[in-house]
Length: 138
Image (tube, rainbow, N blue to C red):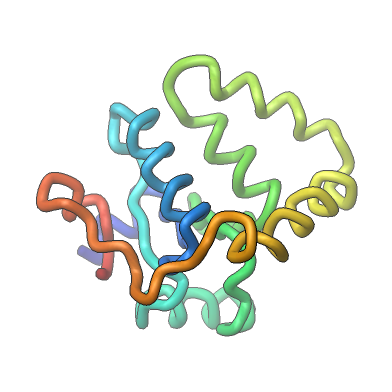
């Protein structure tokens, strides 16, 4: 398991957020080469990695991407992920030219309202047996 997390980019997500779980399923559908692995921000592994990179353990309002030893959050993480998806999704990387404070304004607006708009689960998503290998910790 350790070698997988060192080689493949890891997407950290809010495991109880319906929007976030939907985003993970979207990435899985558009990542035919299985480039990404996933871990809940609420998991022990997720919490430990956040601390290693100086991120607060209560910082659950953002998607986090760990790729090649670098951390990306918020809109930067979303754009980095889109760059590596199949189909036309890499075209969204064009929005990287928009200043980060503008991109993150809209990201934060959605993140702050995600539970109200999309709902929340009582527990983290449990992947199907076929997808379990793509998750670091459940």
